[in-house]
Length: 237
Image 1: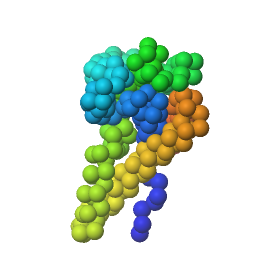
Image 2: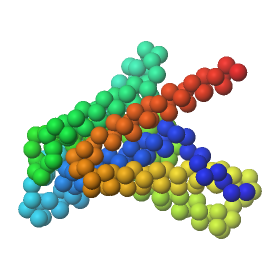
Image 3: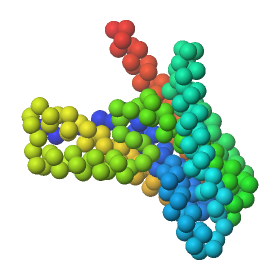
């Protein structure tokens, strides 16, 4: 029997779309800045320096800022646990707020032919913070699902699992491997859809592309509330 096309829950699926969208938006509108796959900025920074161009400030700051935010997110989680508040909901809301601020700044001060201006750097680094939070809370709260922000490891694991299925796995392991590879492929497709959506949007509306990020973030919050409600009803049934 073939696996169902969509087994990835809505929250991680939309998070994957969001990551692809934000990374592509920032890359196109902010002179090659990666806000999610921040280590990619080593490459684009090297290219900028080799070509004698500017657009380096946000790329230099992105990785240390990303690391600091992930570190702080982990520490803050320990404090939030004591409060009994819905921690994942707080992270999702904070991400939405940050993306909204970045979108407003981009529309107000964009476009950004020089990505080293204060508004451009601010937009880029605010999005780095938002995506650092997503990377952190995924590892903490959604660890059973494929990564939503970086697809290299996901693609590698998907190909390994597909090779195992082609070669043949034991009957008792096949359902788990099939479910995992389906989730992995769904995550890759979701990320690619986000990239495509950002590219098409940027081609038509330039800096207004950043308004899409908080829209996806709001969708994620909506799905989170729905899934939490469904889980609560199931638990009380």
